[in-house]
Every structure is written in structure tokens, then in C-alpha cells.
Image (cartoon, rainbow, N blue to C red; front, side, top):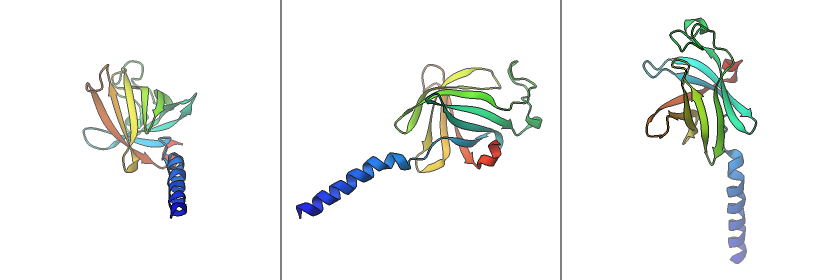
Length: 149
């Protein structure tokens, strides 16, 4: 009986140690969704750089890829391979201490992100100024890598 118990505990310990290896990564290509009408606004590629997660707008899907009515820095420009996310550090299953830029306003916000529990094809992001409660959230959709080429 004790041998069965030891085997069971050993198997459980191995599974617990291996579980993080099966965790889905936030790396990949993501479609950003317009809050007003639910259409895809852009594609963002998230990847590792210098021990943190960063993200670049690969392309906009509207206005021929040009940022229209945006902050001066971005206005009228084709936003391609433009860094909008940086500094995200893993903390368990979420990423903290990041920042994200809104090209419309040109403002930079502190941000956190994590995969939606039970759905590794949805990425929850929250940008905020100072206090997380005073922020805005979005959920992005994972899309095929071909959208970020």
C-alpha cells in the first residue's frame, strides 16, 4: 500500500513540476480589436527581448495602414514594426511592470497582461495611470503568424 502511495505522490510531483512547461506563451501574433465596433484595428507581434516581453505593431488594418487622427508623432505615418509595448516581466501566469503606448493619444501607460484563463487564444491587457483601478482593459485575439509577416 505504501508503495502505491509513493508512486502516486511521485507522479503528482512530476506533473506539478512539468505543468509550467506546458503553459501557453503570450509570444505570437495578436489582433487588436476596436472597442466600438469589434473590428480588427491592427496586428501586434509579442516576443522576448532582453528578458522581457515587448510588442510591435506589425500593421494597421484601416486607412491603408496610416495612423489617422493620431498623436503628432504617429499622425499620417504608416505604422509598421513600431514598438508599442515594452518591459513586461513574468510574475506567475501574468506579466507585470510593462508599458504600452496608445498611438491615438501618444500617451504611455503602465500595463499588465495575461492569457485569459481557459483560453490561450485571448490576451487580457490593462493599461493604467498610477492605479490599476483607473485604467482601461482590452482583450486581443491570437491569430496565425502569417498576419505578422
